[in-house]
Length: 240
Length: 325
Image (cartoon, rainbow over all chains, first blue to last red; front, side, top):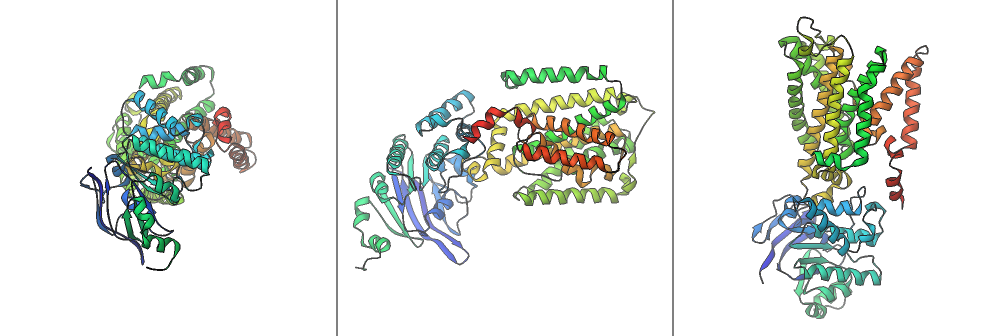
């Protein structure tokens, strides 16, 4: 297995607030890496840095051996990193189909193939019955699915999922987990932020725990479940 | 390109019918005043379609398009007045200058969002007006009168009848209209709509938002500049008060908004309705000073209140219906 994403000493500071401090980790090609941590641990900040929606204060990010932290967000997307947003950012005035089509267009010049891909992606994300609906009229679950559909339409190598399960009911969650699994089987490496522990522990190959902007622990779900520091951070138990 | 237009059967028939009506209309209309209105409609159609690209498709509300209108008009005016160069050539020069101005202004201004962009473009247009007011070689506040009777009419684009103007302007309207239709279904059209809907997610799927907004701004400036060039040749006298007051910028915006922003047909319908209402009220209520503007204002408020999607939204009921679900 090769390293697809290599983050070295990533630090992001907002004025006096240290959102990410000296974060170093690697993502292996083809794995699912879950990112967990209490509120304010800096998970979304890390995602924004990875997709270059803001620039790191210091540190470096390498994607497939190429330094990317000086690029624009659209350039990162061209390289093959797709992201979803924690608060769904659908293109409200466009239909579901157009939302995905716009994403697919950048990847392929051929019109027929693009349309075909779009239809497949929409169907795969369970939105086939809603193609002609305006994106703004969707409910939360559908909007989250649309986020994923738009992200995978650019045929990414690495997918950053930001809390795609939050606010979903049990049944919806099972469907969403299946969707993530299917995307993973297509050969996409996944880095996912998730609050729902059950999902993280089930889906991830490895889990990284962030707390107050620092990496607290990295390991397999079992290791993380037994890690005393993690229990301390989450439950506030006695320090061993 | 031709395929894109002919694919939409309904659009095709509508367009052909409208074109035929527009072509034979002057045969029946003998009144110069009505011809004058039709010519103004053509100019406003061009202005509306130009604004629609940056304001309607890309969603960047510009309140300063009178600047490009002025640039187009002045390039033609100066070319004829000082150097006796045909407006057929100078209008292209005007478009190039407008495009360059758009690039220079767009660099910093397109970083601004929403109201800030609107205010900044408005300020830019006002600056332009004041510069033209104070430049002596373009006539300053007195303007330029560039009527030229020595050169042939086809060369100066100055005719005594109104029909030639009408047909020339109509040609340009048709060209710009068809180009808008092609853009609407192209990658550029989709990208601009994506940027309008949500800039962040547009970036996240790999759209270079800066580049596409700039492209939209340039196209928009070029079309408005063309309208300015044509208008200058029609009235043969230009000064900053006619071309670049704030209300021209507002009217350009209003034409597109009334018709339906972000649609191909919207600005065309808007221009027609606006100009007809404006000229009709002016001639009907001429006896009461200022009453025409009052009526005009009320009608605009009524249309905007009851048809937020513009006049074309009446015809797109089906699409509007599925939005509500």
